[in-house]
Amino acid sequence: MKLIDSHCHLNADLLASQTTKIISDANAVGVDKFIVPGVIAAQWNTQLQLGSLHNGIYCGAGLHPLFLEHHHRKDLIKLEELCQQNLLVAIGEIGLDFYHGREREAEQIMLFEEQLSIADNANLPIILHVRKAHDQVLATLRKKQLAKGGTVHAFNGSIQQAKQYIDLGFAIGIGGAITYPRAKKLRKMAALLPEEAILLETDSPDMVVAGKGRGPNLPQYLIEILHVLAKLRQITPERLAEAITLNTKRAFNLG
Image (cartoon, rainbow, N blue to C red; front, side, top):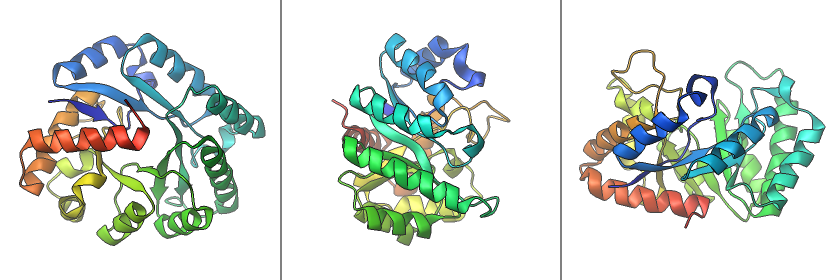
């Protein structure tokens, strides 16, 4: 049984010194590929170095909406250059985050739309980060009419919103939150998703799965997310893993 962690930050400070062991432990339970998104330009080179050192690591790059103070205009030029060098499998993670308010809404929207254009020009999928902004993001995606879709990272919206993303060519990322029994709405939504639209992710080192204390979260725990989701959907983990692996390869154009 093989799995792909569709969203993990292996370059994060909490994980960077143990990357070889983390990958080995993940491989031992069947997780053999990893999508590593970027959030600020200063980290992109580190991600790409990881990809060159370890088999199975594929990189995205993007300017995250919560880190506006770290972003500069020149970063967008660098992002275009990385696309031209065929070093990325996706643009992300990008999006809108109004969880803490809308004080910088205009800046977030401008940055988001510029990166959508870069992704469209490069014919790359996008990795979406969305909090308290699904309607705005969906409206922007409809306006842009991208050639490629992408993934919605750590989706926690409604089944109706999920279906709107799916109609626009996006897959839905399901993470450790579903391992908590109290996440009843999320579990119900995950059980109803079309099988062909589901991806699994850990968001390591964040989004710790149930029973692991304060973490850090690790790609090897993807297997626990799989088992919970399989039980919710009343199918075998093996069948679900096969479907989700195909979904992830399709979403990121992996061979």
